[in-house]
Image (tube, rainbow, N blue to C red):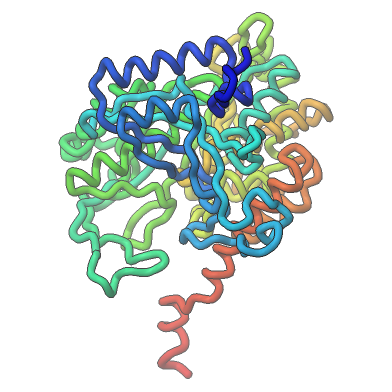
Length: 486
């Protein structure tokens, strides 16, 4: 369809960014904004850290943005965890040979109509997840949702869909003070003052659940209203620590669900005087590390069967399942850069801690990196990767699993014997630091090729900017160790 003389087609139509079905869904979103009487719509995208950024539009402008796209400063894709831009964007090529980011130029956000939600905790507000494009209609290569889409397409070409279930641990604290005095301002600012909701260690305690239920209930109903497939809420081992488990989904769905869940949990609880933290190991006395256990399987596209389930007791995993598992193990050190992307997350990898310390697997063994669940004839057969932290960007984490597993399938790798003593097994140790993980990623030719060298260079530079800031800080440990002694 051509535009009328003198009329330029809207950005989405001009670049053919939606097919007929998606265009119809976008029109339905616009109609729903009107019918629901919404006043505001949040247009957001997931940045490199898996955090949501974007703009909030009044309803009339939101309807326009569904077709025209929405400009957003491109430096949001170039920031480390402190919000410092890791490149000199006012230099030629923005300092890394990419003229599209010169001068802190805009990228264009295009809303995915399938992601549209009403926000239960924000009256008359809508929410839509976006993808990022350059002004000429090309996808921004650093849009991590797009990176995951590419991994899914590669998997689909091999004949499979990716099925994922989420098991997420996190902490909930009472907010004692937000620390907003001017002297607390910084880059980043001071974290809030908090207190525990309970003390001691009581795994799966029903009494503890009852104590926390008034706080948990603040989350349960809104999460279900958002359509997230919440299955269970459990009391974790540590004080003020809980676990939310979500039913399995296919493709983009579980990654989008993780993004929405984390954002919703923090916003809802903050409004009620609580602080939800997905930081792996907060610096508070007596707390336990939080993990994110990723349950994954492949679904055959031709007949919908679980492609991991074997055919008998001697073959609990199919050849595809074994090869995929072996790929996860072979690339475990490099993929840790995506599964555990913070400096803090590496505090968790300790022997005999219910967290892995090396690249092992085992049948129903929670000390192994990959726990095999199910087996022959079981449609729920899956691989539970226990290496992740809850702060991970799900799009990059999932993409790393797909690329590692596909390499295992392509090379017909075998995982070796089950590690019944996982903390003593002769296997490659997981990285002990984020820097070690980034070095392993840089040296992993298969993952570099799968993600693309430009994406790997971009990601590692952002992470190394965080490491450089960390290494320049004088820590409490150093002050205690040396200040009086020397």
